[in-house]
Length: 397
Ligand code: NAD
Ligand code: MG
Image (cartoon, rainbow, N blue to C red; front, side, top):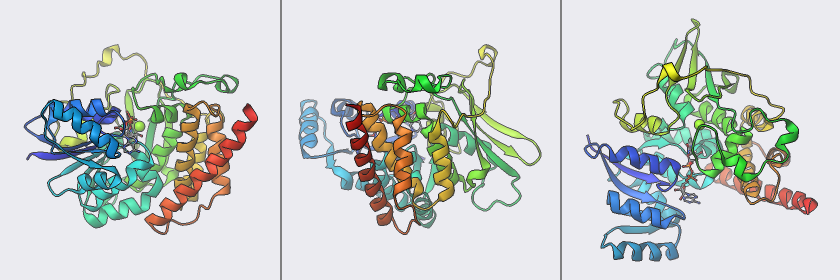
């Protein structure tokens, strides 16, 4: 059956790869809406190629610019604006499937809008789940939405779990989820070397090409921490049963361990088009454009334990998960602010973890009472993080 898609964050790394897969299967997928924040010329090219009914941009100035770009090419497309526009195209009755690929907390409202409308939601935006995991999954169950993981580790776990897991499957025998991590560009760097990491070094990931924020998260290993929290909510497995294994080659994308000693894994070349195609077509399988894995020329798969001393962000995320309540919300907000400050060269690399730890110490991390409560905690944590960074950065000048 033809699926009609909204792609939230179409111009980003996940968004463009999604369109790459979609373009290979015009018989299966039609694009209803594309959204972008800044890269309007890229969005205009995408609109010309996929002819969606709607597009969403951040404000009226961006709408005028896009409108004139499209008029020059004589292309008709309804242009909506802002968060309300994003929520509208995510929940539209003509849409069956929503790719949630906006980065950061900005993705929460539109992703929840898709969930509440009972859509099939392909979830790349891990921050939404980290911020409000329990509320998000409760809403998905209530609305009968299907949430399919795009994050490569969660997609691999999903593929390695027995069908129906997470919906009360008895005696599944699942003992642990083993999330693999490449270790990022600084896996072998000393604590001393980490003091002088620059933004350009941090965004150059050895195996994956990704947006800037997630690339920095991979370098601090906060990305893996966010993924542990994401796995807890997606699969309903406690943090004590989610382990992280460093696997620098990024060939095994994650594993599931069973009571009988079996470990099931999903392997493939590190290319996000594989999990995207898997979730788009699930339960079918379609071509993604990814080269088949050449095992004979894959030299040595190795595994290590993560080092929480050099990469404290991973430990902070485990601690926030076990504290529960608003702690993951605060962790995520402080991390977003700290990563942006690091990319702006306002704080050094190691201060990302220092900032997150300080904000976790000084913010309310009680129970998540409602979505409004989560959003207020997010805003408060951002203010505390900004103030902490302003104070610290004065001391660097
Ligand atoms: P990106 O920076 O390349 O793209 C982000 C997209 O979001 C862009 O289309 C941008 O226009 C849009 N956007 C940014 N800020 C916005 C705002 N305030 N309002 C509305 N739209 C906004 O990021 P990415 O690497 O594609 O990652 C997207 C999400 O997917 C992130 O949550 C990331 O953690 C997750 N993810 C990415 C990868 C990957 O390989 N890139 C892998 C796993 C998970
Ligand atoms: Mg991942």
